[in-house]
Image (cartoon, rainbow, N blue to C red; front, side, top):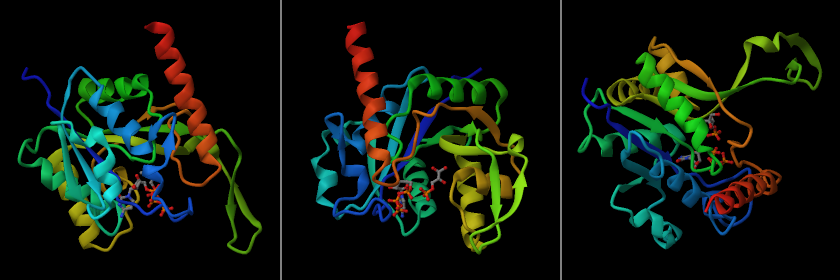
Length: 241
Ligand SMILES: Nc1ccn([C@@H]2O[C@H](COP(=O)(O)OP(=O)(O)OP(=O)(O)O)[C@@H](O)[C@H]2O)c(=O)n1
Ligand SMILES: C[C@](O)(CO)[C@H](O)COP(=O)(O)O
């Protein structure tokens, strides 16, 4: 069997509205480096299989992108992001077409998730390559879930055993994902993750349990927790040196 080829896209062109502040959150520094650096490093460090190219979707006009040495890595492709996250992902997929085939696998990972543990990434890639079906990292819901009536009161309590919180990376075949995203966007459907476009197109999506460390840095309160996880990883790496 031919060796499966693996590529990646990192959407990193957001403005970080919910974080506030002047600087888009992907350039905020935690554990000595910007969030974007940690996210790119997690993918460049992964093997086997080695990720052959990582397309990073940026606000190319943002001079801060030029200040990240990791974006000079020969495997990194800088592409211009789009108005929405899905547009940025598509921009990355189109750039990868120069290097990848439609049947190759692609991981899409948020720059806003800097703490991705290698063990989670290994688990996701192993499951996809073992079963030949796309998958996402996700966490089962552990709190009781309430449905809102839209006016600040509980409408219903739902069975939380059926609900998971999607994370990234999300891993699919490049051509299938490109087609599903293009179809969803053409239909004007809201696409907040790659899996929703694949579900809409009728593809199966496996759920692979991820860890709480793989949080999405969204609001200011997320920063100290992300710093804790990154510091813990660095301390662990020092103990192994
Ligand atoms: N047009 C966009 C919007 C978002 N993203 C990226 O998608 C990831 C997840 O999005 P989110 O957490 O929503 O980031 P922002 O859109 O920057 O945050 P906000 O919604 O608060 O503005 C981030 O890495 C962000 O940079 C992107 O590449 N292009
Ligand atoms: C892709 C994602 O991280 C999965 O939970 C999430 O949908 C991103 O949403 P955002 O509003 O773009 O942060």
